[in-house]
Picture 1 (cartoon, rainbow, N blue to C red):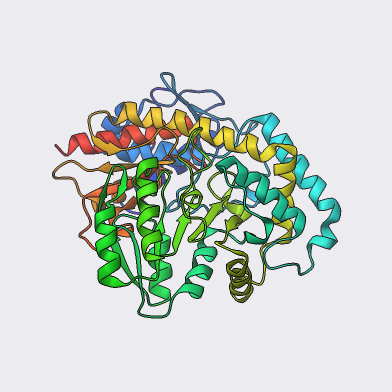
Picture 2 (cartoon, one colour; picture 1 turned 90 degrees about the horizontal axis):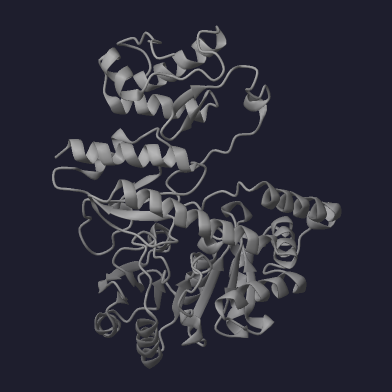
Length: 453
């Protein structure tokens, strides 16, 4: 209904919320029937005398409520009350944290059926899984972990393998073993926010190291070790969060040579290493007696599992890790361990990983096309882009104007160590958002940046 024009008040809720409410009311009273096309966003903005971005956010909000569908090149269409799920408001809705770098969520029916079948198989032994168990996994779970880690070319003995409750608590546990308050930990100068919060909690001093597209500068690393006498080096070497850079194979060997010369432990956070089809070998292959390799499942399967497969430098270190994990969280969830093990054994986990890989590549293409006029860093299989804002555009402005679009945006402040934050933002392409919504939201982001010129 191209002539439909809602009435928005000058006071009350934000106008994009009023617009979504008006769409809901019009559907309920029959003004907007099932399949009716809503006015084009720019025309409605002109008709109402409001900003285009307000209408766009209103349509996104209506889509998130299940009121409309959008189709590229065709427009936005109402979903009639008969097609809306009457139980929708009664289902438990996930409180999604858009500040996290989420993988795309599986949507293929056959894959979803396999995932659900795994849950049903596991819950047949539900009572057993509600008991206290080992703090770092049973034999069968460690064997599954070893199978999964072999995808990265790692073949450690099982006495070095630990199933842990996610990468974040694992990093915390390792640093609890290696450091005392006041010690120094080295990392990249733009790095994962989790290491910043962990070091702050443990009262450790985090020192960022500059580098280039191939990774941290090994001469800078060597000098920093001599100057600061650090207790550990932390790296997120493949598809770095947020820059999307991957440390080259040659630079990995050079880094291993430096830490070997100084006997410096390395925490290798390989959160994204399972996603690219041909990633460089892990740093753990170059210095196995110094590297703590953490193969988290949050990015390649799902964050809700809260699991990581960790390889300690030796069996003694693995026992110490088990002790620290017991202090922090007692044990990983047996229910989640059993599910991950089932999915690895029956191939479902690899199916999820391949879906995430392919979908991430498709979403990167959407972002590249929409943002071709702007400067950003990206990689074909990353979940995000690292966008450098044009002159005159601030990260605070972008974050404020993009609120409510379903696009997760984080400012450079969250990632910056030992230097001043730049006017850059991490734009997440994964999570619940679908391709059509992503295309609209990225298009809106490009429009806002262009309009500021």
